[in-house]
Each structure stands twice: as C-alpha cells, then as structure tokens.
Length: 173
Image 1: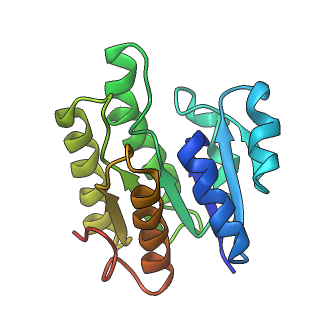
Image 2: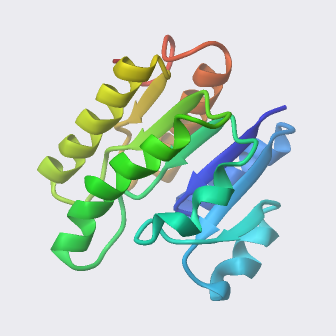
C-alpha cells in the first residue's frame, strides 16, 4: 500500500483515485474549494483544500506521500496562470517534494485545452527534476478525450513507479 497525492481532483483524477483506492492505496486529492470536498471524499479519497497558486497550501499534503500526480493538463483560466501551473508553480512544488517521502512523480502532459508548448515546458521541468534528484517520473500522453485510455495510462504510470521507477511507465526520461 502506498499513499498517492493527486493534485487536480477533477473528473479524471477522481476516477484514478477510485481505482487506486480499490487496489488498497491511500489517496489524498486536492481541490481549491470546499465545494468539491463531497465529490472527492465520495471517491474514497482524503480531501485536501489547497491550490497550486499558493503552494504553501499544498505543503502539508505531501506528508507521507509516495507518488505525487500533477494532473492539471485540463486546467482552464487565464493564459498566464495556466503557464505558471506548468512552469514556476510546478517547479516550486517539485522543489518542495524533494525533501519528503515522495519517490515518484506523474505529470499529465496531454490536453485539448492547454497549449502543447506549455505542457512541453512542464514535461522538461519534471524530467530535469527527475534526473537531478534521481526521482523516477512518468509522463502521461494519453488522450483525456478517451477517459478509459487515459485512466489505463495513469494507472500504469502509478503502478510502474511503485514497482521500481520509470521503467515500464508510459514514458520514461
């Protein structure tokens, strides 16, 4: 059993949460507002109210986490805010994760709403962190428009990291 952190507890994140819980893992999923608590807890996860826009609100969410999943590829909002979520916010979050129990990172890099160059920037950040700190990573490239395919890919990424690193995950460094 492992504790998995899902940053981005939207529809796909909750589906992944339910599968991971069914396999015996503990899942902590984040949301920005109290209004989504019921949906997250209904999936069986521990709900953490916090936002990547204010990273201090997520620091405690990293406690006892084995795998951190940054599932924000479908985020919408102002272009500058979206760029920051896949740039400076992601980089600072991962910097916080280094001195914790996190032993793997999953980054969602496929979206119909976020520009490909923004997601490539996030992928470069995650891969660089993985190389620099010897933290296994997995990059999801499955189409979120195919929820079953995306879910299988995300599940495979988490399982691959839990089984010993990025080898066997959907995309390795």
